[in-house]
Length: 431
Image 1 (cartoon, rainbow, N blue to C red):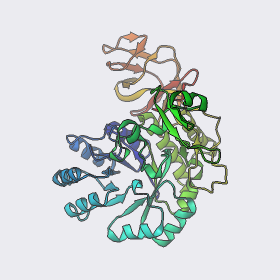
Image 2 (cartoon, rainbow, N blue to C red):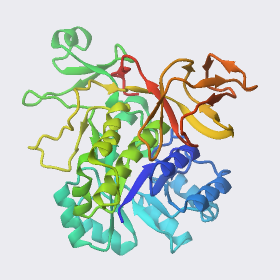
Image 3 (cartoon, helix red, strand yellow):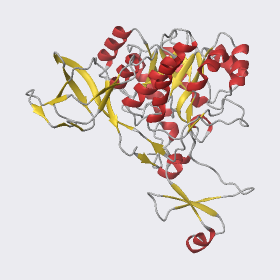
Image 4 (cartoon, rainbow, N blue to C red):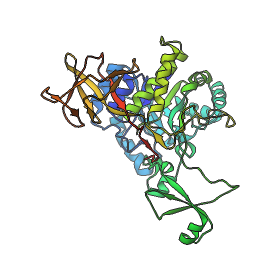
C-alpha cells in the first residue's frame, strides 16, 4: 500500500485532505513547526481532532521540526505530557534533541525524520533506523536511483518523498536568505520566501552611481534602494527562485523505487490547492495500484487541473538526471498562474436542493460555476439560485454572511465551488 500524505494547515484543510483522497495528513504544533505562519492547530482543538480521526480512521502526523534552541527544548519537555494525549500517529522531527525528548516521554512513539535533516544516503538512513526512527523523509535532492539504492540497503525502513509543491533554493530548507533579508529564520518556521520575491539585476553603470562598486546587485520590488550585491562567475549568477515540483507523471517510478509515502507540500496554501492536488495524486496512485475504473481520458482531466492552480513552472526536481528535460509539459508560465477562482465549499443540505455554503469569494446570479468533488471532475451550473439567510432570492453572495445556494445538480457536502477566472489571473509576485 502506497500512502498519499497531504498538508493540513488547519482543521478545515485536514477534513478536505481526507475527503479528497489522502491516506494521512500532517499538521504543525504552534511554535515547533517549520510553517509557523500556517494556522496550525491550537491546544484547545484536541477533542475535535480526536473526532475527525475516529470518523475517518486515517493517520495524522505532527510536525515538530524546527531546529531547537535551549529554551525551546525545555518548553517542549514541559509540554510533552499534554502532547502525549493528542491523537498523533507519528511525529516529524529534524532536531535529534527533539527526538530524544519525544522518545523519553513516549518510548513507543513513531518518529519520522524531517526532510530538513537532508538525509540523502543509505548509511545515514541505516544510522537513523538504528537509533529508533521509523521513517525517513528524504531530502528533495535525492534522485530516483538514490532512492532505489537506499531502499535496497535498508529494506525495512519506511521511505517518504515530496512529490509536489514548492522547492527551496537551499538544501532541503536549510536556508539563511530569509533571516538575512528580513530577520525571519526559515529554520524557526518564519520563512519569508525571500527566494520568490521579485528582483531585478542592476547594471554596472547604475551600481557605480549607487554603490561605487563594480559588483552586480539585486534589487527587490518592495525594497527600492536596497541593493544586495552578488558575484558573477563564468558569466552566470545565482538563481534564487526554483520551479515547483510535480511528479504526477512519474508515480509508478516512485513506487517501483521503494517510496512508501508520497508527500504533497503546501501547509501555507489554500484549501482549494489541497483538494485539487490530493485528488490528482489519489487517482495516479490508484492507477499505479490497479485500483481504478476510470478511463485514461478521465484520469487526464484530474491531471490537467494541476495546471489550473497557482504554481510556478513545474519540473521533476532532482529525481532524474539533470541532462534530461525536467520540465513538465505545459504552456510557458512566468511567475504564478491561476485559471480558476475558488468560490467556496458546499456544506449541509438544509432543505431539498438547498445547500449552506462557506463562501470565500463573491459569485453572482447568472455566472457559470463548477462543482468539483473527490469522485467527480466537475459539474457546470448556470441555473442556480442564490438565497439570503431568510431564503429570499438575491443577486450575489459574499464572504462572511449566512447564504444558501439552490440547485438541481447532484452535488454533495464538501464539494468545492469554483468559476473560471476571466483573463487567468497571473502574478509574478510569489508572496
